[in-house]
Length: 375
Ligand code: SF4
Image (cartoon, rainbow, N blue to C red; front, top):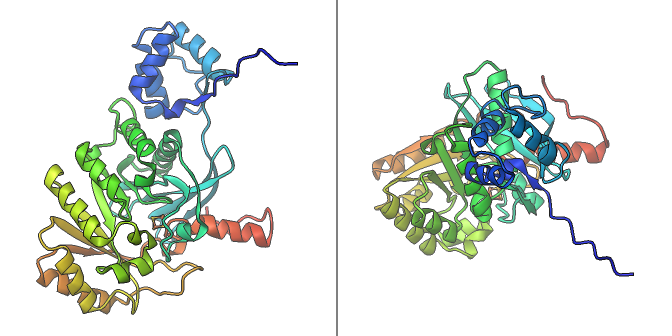
């Protein structure tokens, strides 16, 4: 017998909503838009885990929350579960492994080594880009994260920062698991939410989006005049050398990528951070540095040199300090500013995806056994 029941509309995550969208939902529900400020503050500034017992909610808002969220009728409010947490030996890097509502796990890192807390969040479960030295790339792509799942990580990082006695997050980098520009719309919505001044209130100028070179995304950032910083991972200054490390370089070769970078700097007036993972004997010679200097000629840039974080799936090792300094010397002589990152957090599996991979390995060897996390 045919059923005449119309399909139930899908429930939406409350954390996916921008402030304007939340206001609209409340108005549709018969409330004054002013209630959105109260609800937004509870969610995104006070970081309330439960909206059922908020004394500052007026009766109409309480009723709306109870009816629309409390019973999961229209909206859901779920936070990822922290299933792993490790602290680096210098106590400055805290890495969280979060389980999302469908069981997928992602990593969020809180770093305090500049004296100002920085969160590094994931934008996808897994990654399709396949960078050979990256633990996330080695696991393949699973799915995009929704805006609220990215917001929830920032929220969790803020809680972690405040719990450890810090004043809160100042910087946000999208350099965790996944390629942010492959999940462009969700990432932009999430950033709009975390920058809202009535909520987490992060400054757009303190946010950096990292890409492995997704050209359409770079051009879109420029055309839309997005107010965030951009970091582009290069790792090689010829297509042959780059694609050996970053296979997606075949889709967007360097000539296209650098043209997009030039367009970006011209249209936004902002310099680009270029990331270069230093791998011993692979891309760390003075000749490699010379080719990089030529490639970046005429672009407002800053190069971040990062010693490789070892992963199980890649045999390369990190460049030694003296070699890295020689590389940096070539860039300096060419007038290209650079920083040489320290291998911080290496004892907390600092490269993206490493904690998740370690956890999966541990579970495979001994299902249910926790990793030996520190407090
Ligand atoms: S380095 Fe970034 S873009 Fe490359 S595979 Fe890993 S997560 Fe993806």
